[in-house]
Length: 156
Length: 183
Image (spheres, helix red, strand yellow):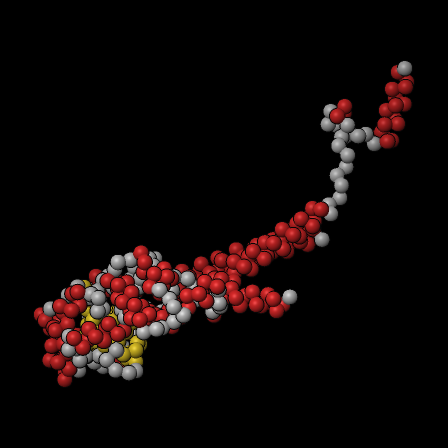
């Protein structure tokens, strides 16, 4: 079980299927969507026509032509521009928290929902509904009922 | 059982909110604003924000701290910036003219591809020290509003209240260097 979980996390954090497919032969198009324009606020390369974005695109083209793998291109750009050049947080170190925390949140929510469902399913049965003829008034105590019957009997 | 569960959930919620609040306070407390633009406006001097970056013109790093005792002309530029190309000859000329008087011109290449910056330096015959700030760390520290931008730092490490935003010419360079040397 533990090994399966570790395998899942490794696959999720390190080698996702799409990553494997494009790692050895990346395209400019896909990298443009995964990298930010260095001088623009919140724009990926694909969204930007800023001169700096064009320079980065040229560098990517040169590196692709030189046979660089996707991780090498992203690594080089991260080295030159810092981690903010990546559109998504890196799946390592502190940044991996951004990927792990949602998983932890989902797992915690599942546990809470499970516990609540278990609690509700084991809840004590409710007392029977009140007699509608009593108009919402509570059932009298047996002693009180006895005394009431006695008092009423005196009027008969 | 139910009471304990509720108590644990409440404690966790409070801890979560407190943690998020702590993060917010930490972010606000550490989010320092550059004093440079205010000082420039008010005509006051402030210590030049420090930096240490890899050099583009040779191996190794260059820090502003290592130039203490010299007048430093800090020029922020990038190879993709048109006016930076136009002002490059004036900066090179000022460097050659004043280098023996304890004046250093430092070009800080901001948010640029390092290989493009090296080619820019080669094509424009730049011989003064050049460093690479790819992540743009100096933008906030110096309150840059665009490129190019030039600052003059006195021998004591304080910025002269004369900043040139946009292309700098020889006259402005001479004026800035004179001010920095005279104080």
